[in-house]
Image 1 (cartoon, rainbow, N blue to C red):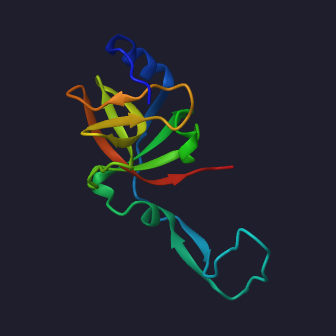
Image 2 (image 1 turned 90 degrees about the horizontal axis):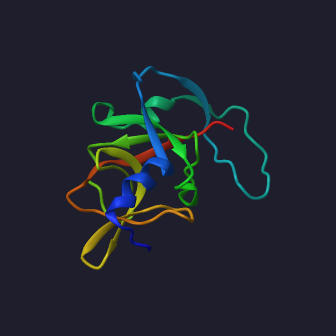
Length: 153
């Protein structure tokens, strides 16, 4: 974990990763759900008659009044499986804890990092090389916890 001087903190954050809040309404979007699981190892035969609809909005967003969907712009969280262009669901209702991926306001700018504890201090840590750790102090507000992710291939 590298510490950085305050003067370079805001500059590094601005160039590291930007989150764009997306407006959305909960509109049911039914997709077919195969009730059997799909192994990620060896193939298995699928059953044709095991389908039911699933509402992806309801499945991803448990508390709509306290949730936001944001688009990730940057690469600092690729080690956590969060890529540039992904949509993340952020909950303001979930209490942030060490280990959670969070959206934080640092000097008023949003960033996406993992919240970690080192000794008696909390830090915001990127999950890619080349990004400095950010100490959680009076200039940092943990804004929400990432509770879902959507990606198109």
